[in-house]
Amino acid sequence: MPAVCDSFLDDIEDIVSAQDPKPHDRQFRKESIIPKVRKRNSQKNVEADEDPPSDSIIPGVQKIWIRTWGCSHNNSDGEYMAGQLAAYGYKIAENAAEADLWLLNSCTVKSPAEDHFRNSIRKAQEGKKKVVLAGCVPQAQPRQDYLQGLSIIGVQQIDRVVEVVEETIKEGVCEIWLTSEDTGAYGRDIGTDLPTLLWRLVEVIPEGALLRVGMTNPPYILEHLEEMAKILNHPRVYAFLHVPVQTASDSILMDMKREYCVADFKRVVDFLKEKVPGITIATDIICGFPGETDEDFQETMNLVGEYKFPSLFINQFYPRPGTPAAKMHQVPAQIKKQRTKELSQLFHSYNPYDHKIGERQKVLVTEESFDSKFYVAHNRFYEQVLIPKNPEFMGKMVEVDIYEAGKHFMKGHPVSDTQVFTPSITKPFAKGEVSGLTEEFRHALKNGSESKACPSAEKQKVPLSHRMVMRLPWQQGGSVLKILSLSVALLAVLIAFYYGGV
Image (cartoon, rainbow, N blue to C red; front, side, top):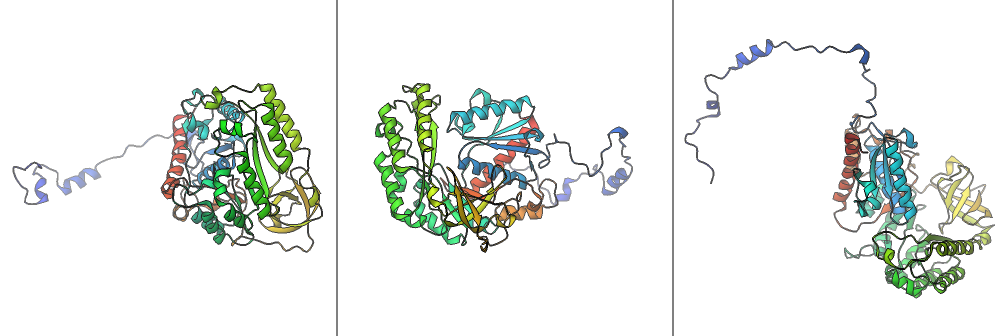
């Protein structure tokens, strides 16, 4: 029960007592106040339009260098964070030495990648750089000594994929990557499946734009082989699929706790190669998993020799402390190294594209080659085709004649009378423009475009490519997760600047 007052006020004015100053008295006292003038140090005068110092904690005035290790999923996280930070006004630095803060985005798949990650942290600390860590390494093992005292961003998932694709296609994106740790498992927790999602996506992707379906393990794709074959034959979907096998030994697959056998993998590959003519199947191999015998390894060599995968990712096994595999009997390092070398030699013994010399292909141009000598394009089967640099081709589909083939690429001359086709609804973004922003976020940017802390997206300079990498949802409530992901990222950056971060 609330306390009962002993007396009641007739009106709120009764609160004012006779001793309190009247309005006239308060005004008189205000006029009699003489403000104190601070003396200014003439040697430290700052121009009004001068940029804040680089160590300022005002959002949006610092330079951030972003480095990513790992899979396309990790690259997606890196591009997403870069775009959002740039939209808030931060400058994305291409030179690590010029940056005020390093945002290091890691992957736990391979020990060498983690070693580079650890070395980069040490280098940042030695250079007195502020540090923010992202990715699965700090989240999986946050108590590692070298992570102590640093700002860490956890892995977040993005939901509502179709809506994001619809919005993105309106900004000029011509290639979409749909990727996750296991794309084939999509929807199992929310009452749907991957084919349902893919059919929804191809409905909104315009003609000429292409969707690349990411890695999927055999168990889940086996459930949808018929529908997946139809989708991979769709003109707006690359006839490409990454299906890891890891080893051709069933006993080793059992030790790896994989939920499939070699026969399952072969069934997937054989079915898709039959139903999707020319399809590219990429796969992964781990050399030297604990307990792998010479016979086990020979089975893997036979599998690669049989299928001659055009894209093969060969990984030498590295034990991760604390995992069950680390406690198993290890294959000697020298044997692991030798097996990796033998498998690599087998892979390089065949040329998968020689028979395509002389073909005329339609290719989608998406980026510049590492040596800056060519533009990189991909044909219907996601095979890499290098073509002469012509700014009119970027983000567009052109016809080329293949005149040369290497191990990992082909080279093509544009057909003289080729029609350059623009798949996007609008003009593609120039390099550095931010894509993938939600309508709410874009509206907020527009309203605050004159604010230093939140300039308009058109003014941002962030090195993003013409493709957009999508990540899959593993739980609902994606709009909230997206906001949390951005909020955590920005908060971590601000905390790192405020407390020194190193």
